[in-house]
Length: 210
Image (cartoon, rainbow, N blue to C red; front, side, top):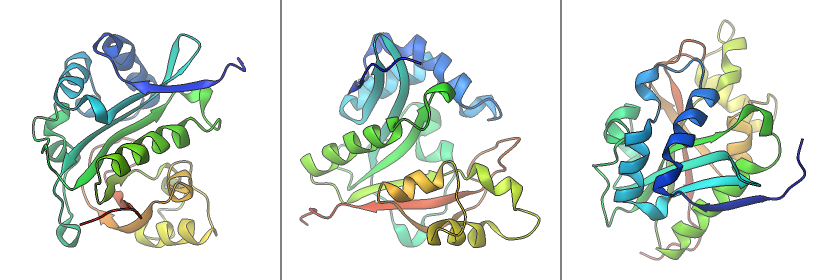
């Protein structure tokens, strides 16, 4: 495996074909209706270029982060993935929205455990502080839960991951990057292996000024 450094940059329109393939490789069990395609990437970059990032090693894109600005009531945060992101097109992006909503964070399987997601999260945090947003909100899938679902609820599993008693391939890194679990989102999306529910995860911007 290459030892070249990871570079984070904004997503470009010409990245769309490569990112469409990256989505397919990163989410093999996800219902295809949720995968970002070429036209989604183009729309996302066109609408909110600052919120889209890719991780590059050499000339290869190995990870991506997609986000949009929204106003979100955390007290009433039940929602469906496609509703929050206008089915991948981000046409519901609010130019002066208070929160950055994380639509996607993905890394190619062979490049995981190399800090790529953390580098992409860092780029999001820089953006949030630069434009003074309240923080980040997202629906976090929990791939490790399928091995424990017969013994506990998703809320119980998330609590054990948060306490360090259990580790999850996705939620654990999110917690390390400053997210906290604020609840469970039911029927968030459709995944044949991981189920349909997700954790509501939030990162509060410590420098936010109302």
